[in-house]
Length: 119
Length: 118
Image (tube, rainbow over all chains, first blue to last red; front, side, top):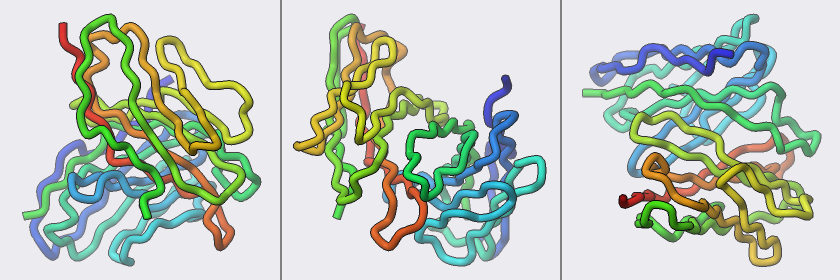
């Protein structure tokens, strides 16, 4: 099985621009989560999508948004880029939604990340 | 307050020796999951091992084992017989339900950099 793929791998943008990152989960996986990793803040959860619906959301401003398509592929959009948005953006897929059922065992498999630099 | 604390920013170990990476966590949720990930310099996070809060036995996966002490809220990762390829950042993570209800939000520690010497 192919792993999680993310495109592009590297991106350079300027302040004020917007950017769209793409993530293709492992075949059969329906949950996609996005994370931001920076040296200062570490790894922070952005949001999780399952069956084309956003199920969980971290503490990020509305400039960060996402969506999921019927084939489970997901895109993340950041509008009005700021210097502080420079980070490694990681996508992770899992077969099930983490949900409220008490099931916390589902393993997430990560992609290689997109390194975004904002100048 | 920090949900996940990894007190060792960097660790060094000799090849073929065992090493323990520390992780303590803070939660009031009786149901939670603890994960360890490895992140090589390439950036990809690689899942290593999982421990559920209700699991009676410590998790093991090949050379990786998790020393789970629930009362002390610690979930240390033990790597036996270290290899040069084990040099990487290691992250401890927890998935718990928020106190206000809702779904399981994962939180990560700041990581431990492990260097394996030949």
